[in-house]
Length: 260
Ligand code: ZN
Ligand code: FE
Image (cartoon, rainbow, N blue to C red; front, side):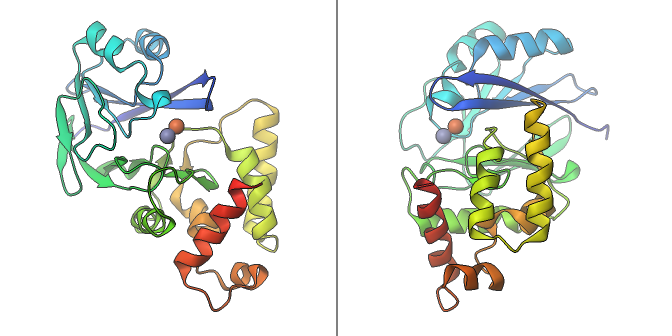
């Protein structure tokens, strides 16, 4: 089984800042998938640059910065569009509806569907076990997580736990470059974390040069992302929440970030 190739490009959206689009390509079959379709022009240019033909879109959720270019890309390429079965708002143009436990293939590699509601109720993420790569949409970010618009903190915590349980050497592709602000916030809730201090310095240096901080390794997130660390004794002590449940600690961190 030949390896899959991964490629990431960025575009700016007025509402959401820097968005990332991730491409998955099989040199064996020529199949190419793109995770989400927030900007048709960026997708078409990336395909032309790589000489790839789009065969699939894997949609994570209904927000405009993830689906605005869907119909234009589909019309231009004739690709098959995979997306959430449990829709909180209708997404036009979906061909294949997927839910937790479903899987499909690209280039002979299995892709597992994970439902991770919280940011939205329809959120699905895509995990490729053979290449230990996950596409987390707006659920898990580098050093952060999505705002809770449609779900509850408990639901979002469960979704993050599902991602945290993947192998630690999984590569995490998320949809936004929010890492610099997330690092500044993380230092306020987990100030004694030396791994976080080191990562934050690296993030500030990368962003000063305009370089991406996505993708990241899940092991790094487990060590430094406060939204995955609700059970960490030092952070709980810092928050004065040593007796609270993990979900309560997560909810407090999320609330503080919303007001940061
Ligand atoms: Zn979103
Ligand atoms: Fe988004």
